[in-house]
Amino acid sequence: MALDDFDRALIAATQGGLPLVPRPYDAVGERLGVPGQQVRERLAQMLETGLVRRIGAVPNHYRLGFTANGMSVWDVDDTQVDILGERIGQLPGVSHCYRRPRRLPSWPYNLFAMLHGRSRAEVEQQAVQLQELLGSACRGHDILYSTAILKKTGLRLKES
Amino acid sequence: MLSPDDARLLERLHGDLPLTEQPFADVAAEFGWTEDYVIGRLAALLESGMLTRFGPLFQIERAGGLFVLAAMAVPEERYEAVTAQVNAHPEIAHNYRRAHALNMWFVLGTETPVQCAAAIERIEAETGLPVLAFPKEREFFVELKLPLTSGEAHGA
Image (cartoon, rainbow over all chains, first blue to last red; front, side):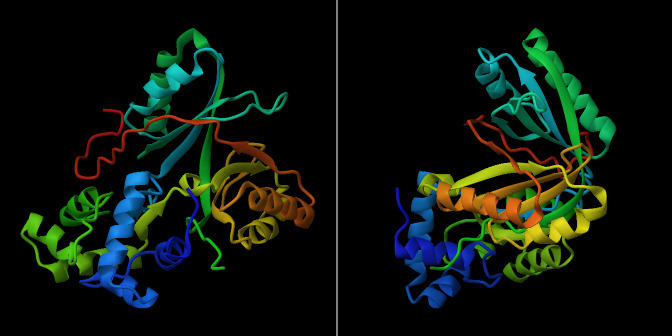
């Protein structure tokens, strides 16, 4: 599904956020020269196709008290990684879970699960749960804690 | 920390802002609040940095684009300078410092794979450092959960 000009304009107009006014979709429409209803209808279509994942608040985990943020990475047997990845996505505290390529020899990990907690101890506890779930399919793991947010702007499509 | 009202509001608005003419009034009605109060709280949460953004979250993969996670091992004495070089690229959606030999992890969001590869090449050329790309091979279903209103530990 390719973006049309209206999609592109709509993304460019809203990727930085919706205006916090009583009629935000009308305000976006005004900027784009279309009725607010057209904005709402297109956003509804985008939600349906998954182009929009959700419309809402993007929290700053740090400021909300979830100061421990660990990217846990696991070296999991290729034949079992997909089944186990689905199960890990259900665990509390896991906000993202992906299979990614290994970069041998320096990077043996093929499963990434982002863990959030109010302390590192809480994140470590979650990692123990993951380890138990992965069992003998896992040959090793590491947790990379974030120590600073260097940038967090989200998607920025160029207006073309 | 969040007030109880703010926590309720954020749990409600983690997703699903209604696609109605006056969505904030509709959310306010669910809580017995006023539209002004909801808008005012959201503005204050953005202002204070509790929220980084409020609006639609795009999954550009669904339109042929992509997000790619990438990492670099940046020498400590150059960390600040390299951060500025990397962040200057509009393709960088977020960037985190992490405690590891690979100490800079960022996500590139682009409309096409070609734009993504080009941005990685430019970053390598500008910084003289190799970029390791970790494209998603599969995304596993993740159930959203943000236990803001309870004091319980995440793992509880």
